[in-house]
Image (cartoon, rainbow, N blue to C red):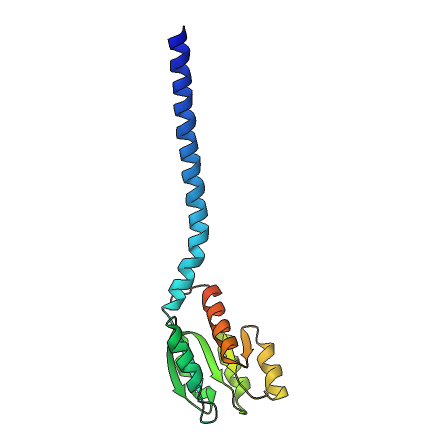
Length: 167
């Protein structure tokens, strides 16, 4: 009788162990899918390029050096005083960083970005015109940075959180 009970307890222990291992594996799989989905999104977005639009007044040379030093981001840099002319380049980029200069065509540029759902980061160390600031803030995918550290922080957050869309 003792050996039958002993065999039963051994079988029960084995079944409990196997059930525990299966439950742990399923839980780990579900957690990994949830956790690594965000990581996959971030690393997929890091492979995409950022468009940096400088101007003759705001060349963004210091900011480009900081972005280069970080080693995280790829970017394409153009100098264009009229950002609307650079709109042909924005389709293949995940984010547009624009060195702010006063221009009459900002509303058209923001409309182009809005139609394509591409985030805009406006960088300026000087004060932004009140009308332009209003137009920028009306676009829900826009941010304003006034220091290099804030610029890097915003770039990283947008790239890390933006849903990956294969283009």
